[in-house]
Amino acid sequence: MKNPVRVAITGAAGNIGYQLAFRIASGDMLGKDQPVILQLLEITPALDALKGVVMELRDCAFPLLADVIATDDANVAFADTDYALLVGARPRGPGMERKDLLEANGAIFGPQGKALNAHASRDVKVLVVGNPANTNALIAQAAAPDLNPRNFTAMTRLDHNRAMWQLAEKTDKHVNDVQKMIIWGNHSATQYPDISQCTIAGQAATSQVANDWYESTFIPDVQQRGAAVIKARGASSAASAASAAIDHMRSWALGTASGDWVSMGVPADGSYGIEPGVIYSFPCVCEKGDYRIVTDLPISDFSREKMQATDEELRQERAAIEDLLR
Ligand code: NAD
Ligand code: LMR
Image 1 (spheres, rainbow, N blue to C red):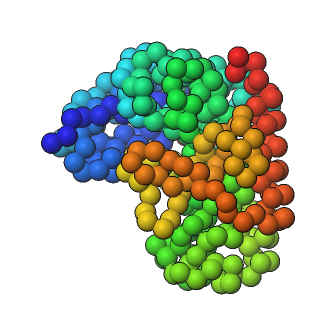
Image 2: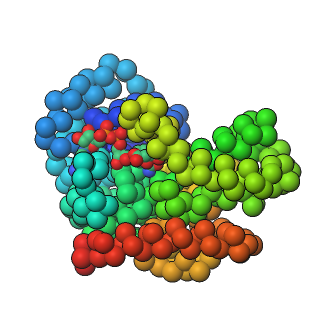
Image 3: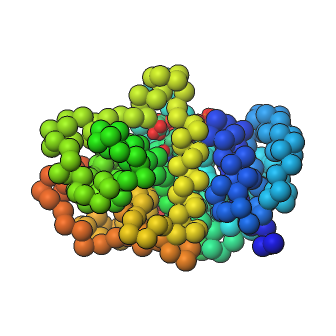
């Protein structure tokens, strides 16, 4: 049996956290041969609820669950952690402007970045799920100068999975037939779901769907899917978000399928003209516990415009919290 690895989850008593903890403990994220120690972080008022989560985790008698730690102290939750899933975030309240939300979350992700910097494994893989995910990841990254900046990522895998399903459904195929989807940019309504490289059962997707459907239905539906789920459920996506977080970490840790890639919000490095300074979603291939941005894909004028629009939004978010990055 392998040695256990430490997996921290923040907001662990919340809707996404409640899904995540059990699936990770059952081996869905890191494999059925990888024991885990769960390190669960909540705010103090939610510690009772978190106690209940811990009771249920124990009651599952998971063979891979080596230990569970529940705490309201980020320094404890991130001690020696190998993986950190930052889910807990301040939701948008009535009358709150985007800038207020960004700043409120800065007050969470700055200190958490600092705690990761001080206590986590030097190779910790960080995934930010809590919204606004890309900019929260940037804030955490800036607060952790001793960690590799590349190890701070944001989740756009849910958007990627949503886009794959929309395309499979439209063409009467299964998601297993869909490859090379791309989500560019921000996890927000400006994200750009791009099918120009996509294949469905080995054939170009662009030859199987009408351009009008792609531009007028597919793109806005993927961009607005989170809002549509909130409208239907009365709460934001939770099981699908947890599933996507597990997909993101599993791909990063164990690798992407041969001939395919995944979408990850990662620090921009100038690829495709997206200058450093934002966490931007790119197509990424993962291998041996690392990721690399897939480069040199052809970019049409249509794509370029959409990629720039979502980049601009990310730079505006950055400008709103610039003081937190110093
Ligand atoms: P939730 O309100 O059910 O749970 C959030 C939990 O975080 C709560 O239990 C809360 O007590 C906790 N929390 C708040 N501040 C904390 C802090 N400083 N430290 C530790 N825990 C803290 O919300 P949810 O449905 O689980 O969603 C969580 C976040 O994920 C939201 O920001 C949501 O918008 C976001 N989300 C992102 C995606 C994505 O694709 N990136 C998808 C769905 C939801
Ligand atoms: C989603 O994409 O489902 C969420 O990010 C929506 C939200 O605002 O919580």
